Amino acid sequence: MTLDLAGQIVELVSRRAGTAAQTEVVVHSAAEGLTRFANSTIHQNVAADTTTVRLRLHADGRTAAGSTTLTGAAGLESLVERTVAAARLSPPDPGWPGLAPPAPLAMERGGVDEATAHASPEERAARVREFVRAAGGLETAGYCRTSSWSAAFANSAGQSVEGRAAEAAMDGIARTGDADGVARLAVGRFADLDGGTLGARAAAKARAAERAVELPPGRYEVVLEPDAVADLLANLSWFGLNGKAFAEGQSFADLGAAQFDPAVTIVDEPLGRGGEPAPGLPFDVEGTPRSALTLVSGGTTTAVTHDRHSAAEAGTTSSGHASPSSRTWGPIAAHLRLEPASGAATSDPARPLLAAISRGLLITDLWYTRVLDQKSLVVTGLTRNGVWLVEDGEVITAVSNLRFTQSYPRALEPGAVRGIGTTAVSLPDGWAGARYVVPALHLASWNVTGNASG
Image (tube, rainbow, N blue to C red; front, side, top):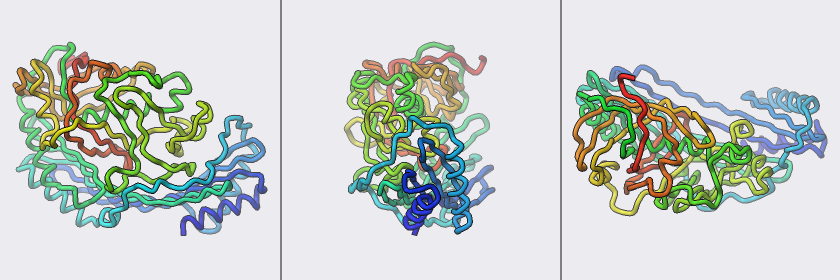
């Protein structure tokens, strides 16, 4: 139905703007259910189900775009008329990259778990109940979220594709009188979301973080838990491994150069791995089919992400990373995986890495991170949800939260990565659909620039 609708709009534009107009249409439906809890009680349960039609056309050297959530005949007629009129008034667009040509979708991708796509409020509430009970009387807060997406794309060049994806995620904290612990997980199957396991983990971390001491600023050897590593990948993706930033000379990326430790391999995997449900749609908003893209291989930067515009500037092809905002922010990889080390999985992803530390820090989470210098990707931010001093491989004491100022690429440069965990954890991003699959990291140096006193 949505694919037919996309094709009908392409034909409607042809009648209004002429057959020479280049047209692309995305019909995107998103359904999200969100159950939020605070003070160990569910306080909000909301659901949204929205279908958005996005139209972009290029006619007489000018480009315009528009969107609507009114999918009836009158709403679609208005969308076409507004967009055709806007194109006539738009400035010339010499950078128009043309339309995606007809191309099949990748054959290897996970399916959609229907139980996830259609999870009920009662099922989400059950996960919250498990989390709260497992916290053993500690105050808890967080959310349980289920999301599903379906989309259809058609353009006047003959490309016509459709697909679906779904995700379940939970993010919660447990709190003592003076310390917080966190547990997060994103999965393609709702059945794999165990609220009890997550609640127990958050509570254990909160209790372990009590009676924190203060440490002076300085450079510390660190083990970053997966939650903290996810922030590294997010910033590398947004500000470095981004075709627009690369084309503008604002990225640290140097294709073909060994910029990272040989242990580092980073892959964008929108279609999932090993038959698992795919975390993303199989094509982008320009209709380019998606597949796995290796951005860093064995320490060498091998690729940056592209939409059709940044690809044309770079003299290459789109990697399937166009989004409604990619012309402004650049094409962003949203399904990143840092390959773990080989070995048996462990229940605590960070614990095996601590043995190699003589004196350093175990850091759970990074937040409020802001880029100070994009070219070198120097980032400042704070720790949260638990920091501990480690001596001779043993956790000695909890540490109060710290401010850091650190170049992320330098933290991962050759010789700087002393270990990678064997267990990768799938973590949700703040917006539904993005996901980071990450192990813990043992890094030689992390620049702490402040503590609780300043």
